[in-house]
Image: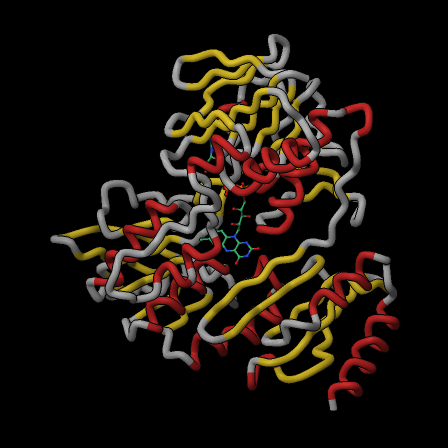
Amino acid sequence: VRRLVVVGASLAGLRAVEAARRDGFDGRITLVGAEPHLPYDRPPLSKRFLDASGTDPVPPTFRTEEALRTDLGAELLLGDPATFLDTAARTIVVGGRTIGYDALVVATGATARRLPGAAGLTGVHTLRTLDDALAVRRALDSGARTVVIGAGFIGAETAAAARKRGLDVVVVETQPTPLVRAVGEAMGGALASLHLRHGTDLRCGLSVTSLEGEERVERVRLSDGSVLDADLVVVGTGAVPATDWLEDSGLTLSNGVVCDETLCTGAEGVYAAGDVARWHNPAFDRLMRLEHWISAAEQGAVAARNALNPAAAKTYATVPYFWSDQYDSRIQFVGVPQSDEIDVVDGDIEGDQHGVALYRGGDRLVGALAVNRPTEIMKYRGLIARGASWAEGLAFARSRSRSRH
Ligand code: FAD
């Protein structure tokens, strides 16, 4: 392999480049990114980046341009998206140029889902990119009355950031509770108390029927007939994998780039990583596409290594993990939220926002939620990884709780 091309200059893409060099690959590396920015970290964008500070915030860039070019020896092609992949010719097209590869890592992530009717409304933003975060921050700086559409993690974190500044915030969610997709309805209901305690007006079970703008005020109409006037509307209704550019590539696209357990797309030399990849996760024996920091970072490294040395390709198995900071709480989750039973084994998640809940799937422990118990979660991740039974999970929780008291 003489040339590695990585498409997507964010977390997974950067980790791919780093892993290739760490393993001693001394060929050419080209990192292609649609955004004009150097690779930067997204989690802070809906958290401390939105805090009031009085000064311009520093973008959460991973490495300087100098470090990317010199230490990693990467050619940077930033500001233009790749628009085409030809797996037979082993080329991609970027900004009208055709670039050849021997090994390719697709790490184009996901883009924020937009609401119909939002186009042209200057106060309506998604929150996925640095440019989005700058726009949201500017609106918060000017004291915007804020409406957040969607109470997933990004919506919840944005609401928390606005409340921290003392701004009026309404969160609208179509599901009966916040965070349904991430932690399930029951625990989402318990975590709704976070919003209520901090003075956020949370309205669940309602959808947006229209979005209009008039003289810099955005008007959000809801399915119960109510109307919200806002200076800032943040749309946090999820993300879709960035696969448009691969439509004619022949790769299998189905809610992401479908890959085997080594992250191989099936096309020679082409691997995928991060939010764009839907791969066979041996830990759960099913296809999964995660939108979590840690798996994007790990997959980036694995995809590059496997692309450079397919004969020795390793599988990537993981128990999903993510965290979220909302108001003054740290929420962490491992495993999968689809379950037959949930048991709060420690603390009181709804009442005082501290505790651990375990998720049962059949006779197995399949998930765990920790709220303000930062040292607990990885222990449960270990249990899930080795296929622990539900009874083992409960016994472990009891022993943890005894050792703390
Ligand atoms: P992305 O970060 O989406 O990057 C993909 C890159 O590819 C982008 O820069 C994009 O512009 C570029 N690209 C797209 N199409 C093309 C193309 N055709 N050609 C070239 N480049 C292209 N996870 C957690 O676990 N905990 C958190 O607290 C958390 N907070 C988050 C907060 C926010 C606001 C966001 C947006 C995400 C958060 N996440 C969090 C998720 C985490 O950031 C993502 O899982 C991670 O960024 C995925 O990395 P990635 O490299 O796969 O994709």
